[in-house]
Image 1 (cartoon, rainbow, N blue to C red):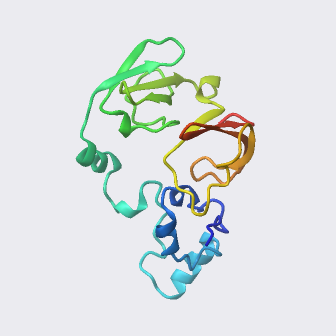
Image 2 (tube, rainbow, N blue to C red; image 1 turned 30 degrees about the vertical axis):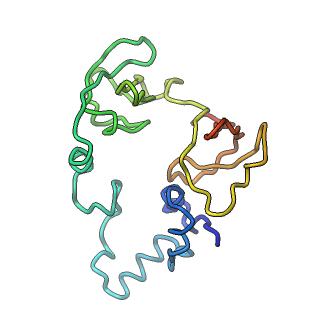
Length: 196
């Protein structure tokens, strides 16, 4: 059993599939994984599927027409916290829960004098850190940690130590990035070769 990336690099969903385990993957079938999105649309038009002309979703497509924040609020509620400017440490606003915000987010912060971008979250203290401007270096990083993920087959790094060269993707971006992985207790640290 193996899991590969889709033919269409823009619509590839392996970032989401990385969250499921080997048993779940063994039950999956991907009959259109070798087609580009345009080819799928054409096939859908040929057989008159009602979704053939529906515009692409930028949200959580399986929720339908439900507002993302309303969906999250229903399950996690709200918990107010501070919004902090990364560069100065000054409080610049309030938020209703870090879970409503993603790294890189610009819209929906309710801050004036921007543009403002979410650059970091402290989930233990319910803080969101933001940075102002379109090209500030504070919006980028080169290190992140990964944990609580599943290997579909055996862990290829379990007997390795030191620097382990890796290639990875951030979310659903089409580009692969070179980096180095370090095993640290029950998690891994990834250092990217370029700013993320």
